[in-house]
Length: 318
Image (cartoon, rainbow, N blue to C red; front, side, top):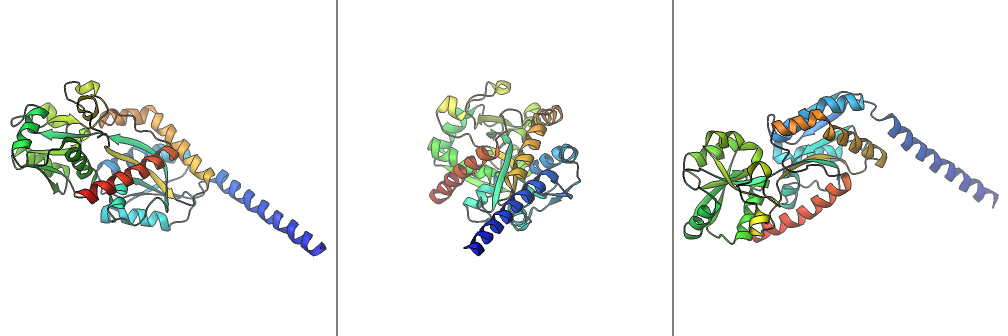
């Protein structure tokens, strides 16, 4: 009896000690450089996002940030490396919607059971873009597409662009549309301007300079309502009642076993960055301000779970 009591007390002391160690590690975090993995190449939207937050992240966490681009396999290598890292918040992963799209397609085995969302910070709105010399508005495009086979481009197969295309195809009942993947946004834009494509699906942030020159024009935004800055362009929900609002979202993930205290610390720091004047200026300059990008860890996780189910269904039914 006496021996059992001693064992019980010893066990409680050990458990108490473990709790103190977790708290101490969270209070001391970070204790070394932070590896910031980007599952995309240099110069793209996700890479720009990482570099726009790098300095503030370093200052607020009082450590060095080391950015590494791991664009192989649509970011799957970066996801796997994050899942295989120590669960201590010293490896963070900047992702776009490609993460959950490739996961739903079975091309990325590292999912939400191994990675935990810290926060979403961007929701870049998708749009249907045409050559204004070919179509004045969406109704003209729609009428043409109902009578003729049309080719609609996008960046990569099994991508946020293709998911937007599939959503549009399903909701609009325009069956004569074919999706044509290109390696990068510049190529698909050139194909529309050159008459090799009838339209393309892509983010608003990438087309504004061509709107100014008159070479390209969005004719439909994938949004709940019309954008104040582009009030003449119809929105999928407001004007047609089509439930198409997903864009290309960008956020931050960590190892699923990261202690809650460290996860909270990272989320709070990212929220401070998101609300800063410096970040708001970056949003404006890169046309990322049309929709509020912020989602907390819990909200972002729920959104990714919903997107996973939706994208699986879209891919199965195409």
